Image 1 (cartoon, rainbow, N blue to C red):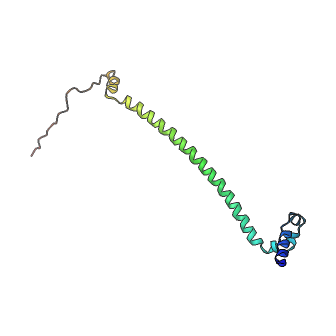
Image 2 (tube, one colour; image 1 turned 120 degrees about the vertical axis):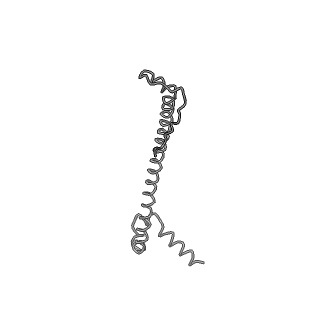
Image 3 (cartoon, rainbow, N blue to C red; image 1 turned 45 degrees about the horizontal axis):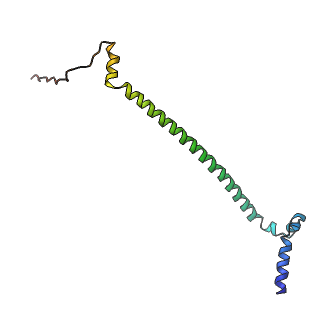
Length: 117
């Protein structure tokens, strides 16, 4: 039991902030032994932060494009309404009266051609 207490005390002593500041933690050599793993973890953290920025920018651009799409759709609807009003039969007939072009009152007739032999 006393050995376990000694091990716990020695581990607690190594994790002491005073030991970290004084450099005792680096003198043990455990940090240098685990340096590849620590650099890998640091690299993963940098990738995680970069992905967060990328996701934020993507979401921001998608929302701005969606807003622009909504504006263009509403503009399309208003232009279609103007087109439909100007292309009514009565509106076209009024515009063509000045050029002396009138709407036909009689329905069109089929003209049959006889084939010559």
